Image (cartoon, rainbow, N blue to C red):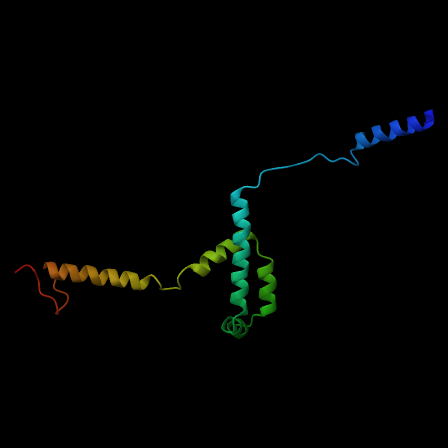
Amino acid sequence: MNTCDRHLVRFLIVSFCYFELPIRPAHAEFASTFSITAASQAESTLQKLEQCLQRDDVRAGLEQNGVNPAAVRARVDALSDEELAAIAGRIDSPPAGGETIDVLAFVFGLLLITDVLGFAKVYSFTRSVKK
């Protein structure tokens, strides 16, 4: 190698190191379990929403209310992971009034117990323990 080539090679090595063109610093981080499970939950929620949108009764309800199903699908595709998690919580929750039956059963049971113990006379089909 002649001196011109050596100087050219040295210049190229120094310039590449100075400008960091061929070599970028590596950036690594640990993948947390939370981030991995959040991504899989978002995918499952998205699949659940897609299944709901494919149902005929849901599509008919959307069209009845004047909503284009293609616009709904585009909106679902644009949702963030947090919005998908919030929607998944609402899908899995009981329908409106689902807890009302529980409250009514509790009140019925409470009145029945107080009636049997003799604190109240609410039902005619019970006999009081107190006399």
